[in-house]
Image 1: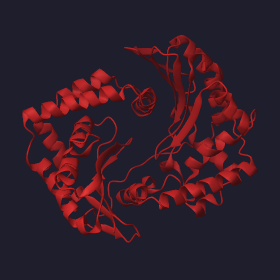
Image 2 (image 1 turned 60 degrees about the vertical axis):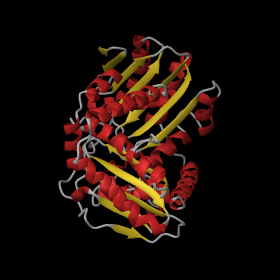
Image 3 (image 1 turned 45 degrees about the horizontal axis):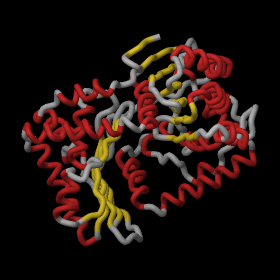
Image 4 (image 1 turned 135 degrees about the horizontal axis):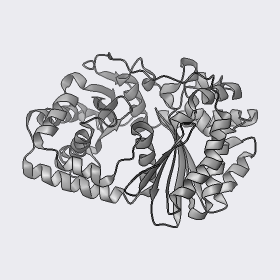
Length: 417
């Protein structure tokens, strides 16, 4: 067992890892994060990771779907799950006294699902509707289309929801094969933010999760390998799709640093300055506050295990599309060419520190972030450690990041117009 400040770690014989953070609260968060996502699907499995996430709630060898729901809801707790390109996460919040109940249920769902035929049919229809809801929302759909463009030819380009064509052929056997291949103990992290003792959490995890992991592991299963190519499509060719929308929707961006890269936090700070959540971001001040051209403009940076991407999104009147795009490109050029003043950077760091302090009040996000860092880095980042690293960044560091990431050759452009 390892310990760092109020964070503890443990690895079981199966390879299953555990991360725990001590908090003082009557409510705890527990979960299991699995390193299985969209990029682990075969060509005829598009949408399978998300489909499995839905279906494990529909029945196990020991419980019906109603019993799964009531197991947490009747104690006033909440259970949830989500799928990304790289992982699938199942987690719950409940009064701390119900730790055993939550862990036993999560293990039952992940290791003993039965995929009832009638439930598979219903969930397929639910996901069909989910796909259509995205098609009706250009501000959400553009993110999927943008990822498809940036990672064209790689599984990261595939939509998380899959397609109606592939979903049509999903069955219990195919879902179980996917889980056998990807839901392996060495690709799982059990996590908790709780006031219970660490030793008790380890013992309960061993009893309910590790025991199932050891008994259900198929040693003959071939683990999914993840590979990332060196070549990608030409970023200098913009793509424009005709959409019947009132506004023009535009996304500009490209590839970026992976998780734990030495310049990841530099890009995180730079993105916050450029178009993060604050109203005083460079893009919001110019495009909305000064010129009144957009209602929404934002930038994001999404690090993945072996790559990442950044993007700027805005929606505007079609007549203003080219002007807005020109202003965004000008801001990116300035970040590459002109370093910030020391005074400006001090204010930006102070602002980010405050934002992170407020964000740290969201325990759900904290628990999920802790699990993700454990999954890919085998360590959960400490808040003060992160801020110490950010505090050391200087204007030249951020200018170097901008030159690498915002280079014109790395600016893909997708437009709904």
